[in-house]
Length: 150
Image 1: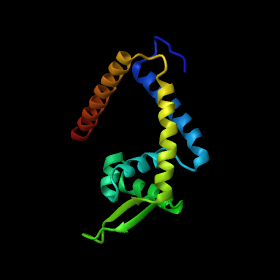
Image 2 (image 1 turned 30 degrees about the horizontal axis):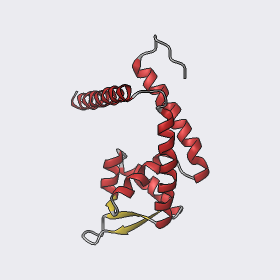
Image 3 (image 1 turned 120 degrees about the horizontal axis):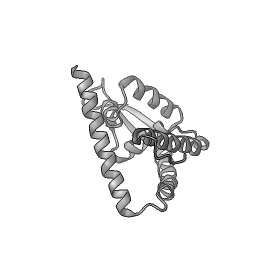
């Protein structure tokens, strides 16, 4: 991606996000993972035994998408689903030992990618970029809420 001063900020963010996603998908391919599968696994590693519903809310996926992704992860023996002891209608999701090992291996490598991604960008520039992206995300949430109420 080359920087064109006439490009809108939204378009530049979109292009950068696409490039990052494409790189990550290529990187994860040999591990048999997609980016959204890794995103779920990483979030599961933070809190073991989360309900499918809570996991879906955490990663902003609807119940059908969560079920589909978890089915694939379960078929790869990376997760284990169990009925909740409090409510058998609710499933809790756990990382398997293989899943935990894979998350640690891939996450470590991706962290070095993140470091390389910001090469030549000073701490202050990174701080301003983070703050700007947080504001953009907040604006998008407001815009989404406005669409719902219209």
